Length: 163
Image (cartoon, rainbow, N blue to C red; front, top):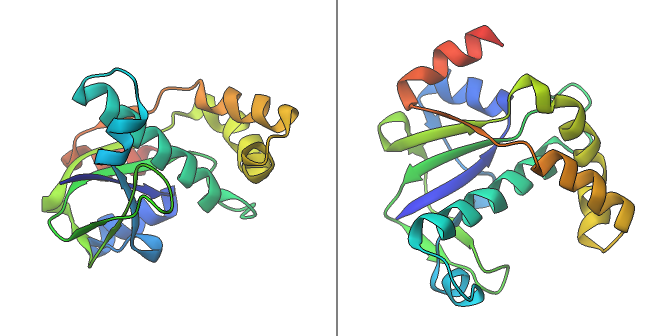
């Protein structure tokens, strides 16, 4: 199953160095039956994109409170076998067992430098936005307006080197 693992730039660097990435708490996001049912319309590609955006929002939570973190959302698209659906947590949430390796990676998605200011602000208010604070929702929306750049797995070391 294709899963989307939320990450940070620091996690990406560790992944490149070690060759393995274990999702925090085993949490990832995917096109699940519950996610498909929650949308009135949409093809597989659109619904997978929705799952990736859920992972990107989770990446903001990983950045929250870490002033030293590079303010860029990161998502790793990985094909994994041992996946447990968790609709009790949210429509697209899954739990994965074990680690992902670079050979499992389909693509990496990362904010560009233009998003940094908005991402930093959004990371500080993501929880308030989830609780319905309209100002926080606006701030979060500004970060989510930035499209994540797409990279092939073999490009990741070079992208990180250029940062």
